[in-house]
Length: 65
Image (cartoon, rainbow, N blue to C red):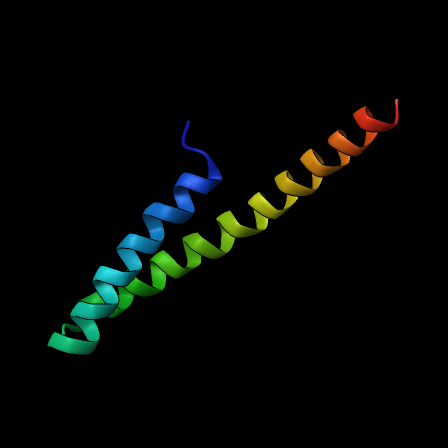
């Protein structure tokens, strides 16, 4: 299964490529693909933040025991 970190990286690469096609070349379909990639990034970021918080709390708990 792909990690949220990997999803963010892949979606960012997609976003950058599609955004360039839209802004530089004027490809309208690329705008929709760029927006989709941004939505994927947004979802994965929320999940990754939760993972990081859980990992941080687990480390703090392990350290205090």
